[in-house]
Image 1 (tube, rainbow, N blue to C red):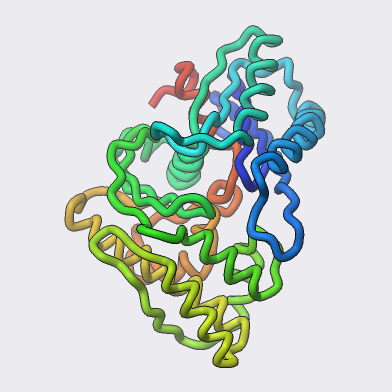
Image 2 (image 1 turned 45 degrees about the vertical axis):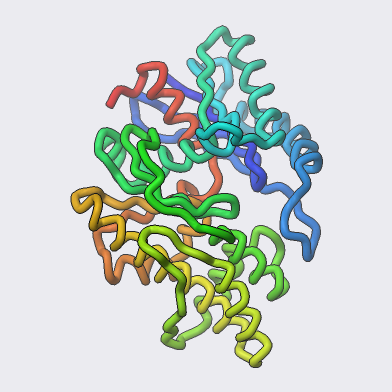
Length: 312
């Protein structure tokens, strides 16, 4: 059985096909939404326009790699997170296309959320089916979310921790844009940070399993004003996020000592963050970038799971 996943976030238009028998992703396509230099994101009206333009193009590309007439079910993210009031118009573009394909093919349509897609993709990349039935602590850290979640079967049981102000991804993007990079700036900031060989001890703000990142933006701006090299500032930013993650993991482990930890979301694809955290907590799962950043892989997997084609 083959399931199609569609995700239209505020960062990227994504399509993916999951083969339930081979238990592998057979097609994964993505197009980032264009953002003007110096800007920190898109208005929703612009995001809707870019998704509307990109979806037919990506669908044709997908059909060349995998015939759409073989699709047995369609999954789509309809909102950012599975909580009441979570809504962004950009997700309606994906829902419209998903509904059209499902009706035309007369196949099931499964609705999920962008965050659940991130969780499923990370669990799958970390250990296939193995982690889905277990209680797992999942970090979802991106431009729009900084949350530590207790999950089971890719469903959120409890929000264990969060940021009380700025999201980690917002700090990364603001600092990256200030350094002259385009939005989103995570990948470019990581490349720059890798050029710095200095050992960095970053100040972080963590209280229990909650954190704050507004101070990080101010610290990085102060470092730049002091004349610190851009590579140093980039590494300071990512090291601070890594240390924050580490502190939150240790606090959460006091309450859930047997839970494994999986890191998802675009920010968590940074090699600097992974190395810093795994040096102290080697059992923490970090997954490859294509499963960590925005994608439709997890959505296609959740569709397979929901229709019973990929039982746990």
